Image (cartoon, rainbow, N blue to C red; front, side, top):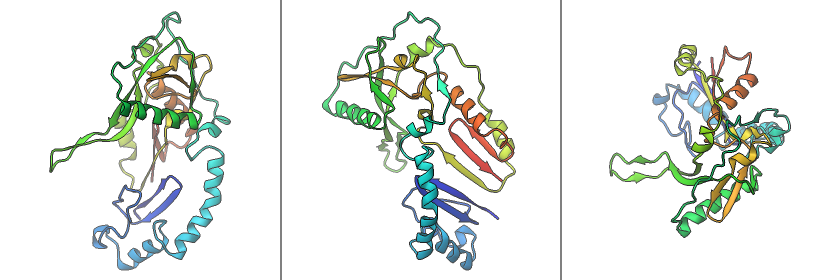
Length: 276
């Protein structure tokens, strides 16, 4: 039997005999395709409409009500939701920077030309990070430059127009990374993962939200993460994206979490694949 399970935010969806799943949250999974395209009988098609979380019927409401207590417990414990702070209470993994020369000071030059629109972009992202408690105002002697980018920018094949991706704030930690000893913990090889999962029939994929932010910074390393935006200097309380050793530190954490499940779970940094 082919199928799978998808968890997206607080929505849990089960699929039976479905081989192609739309990725947009507002997509109607079963209703968006013809029955023959999903290789379903009419009876199976109606059953999926009845039991999937995207259905609007009475069964769907019961399904959501039954799962709500579990989702609330997971949210309270910090395993789902927007705030990773709760997870830190049980999370002993810390990011400690192994600095080569502690006398070096990171002094990136701030952006010279900042438009009002750019400043508003920076302010919006910083406000969101301050709200969930993953950064704080800094008095560090270090200063790494922050920049705004659009991730996943692509070209429309029909019109040739540029399609901007999601707006992100990124950090140029090059100087800090050059002054950090490399963590030698290795990441799993992609070919090794493919060979392990290649003969399976059911795949359930989970993406961790801001996975690196679930690792707390060691207090002695926080000042090194300081970044500058127009009219502000801030530092990270969690492990930011862009640090040289962040992938190795997080992979070690994930391998410890999932040790003993290698026969049916493959983990690559913050991507989890359950296969059977």
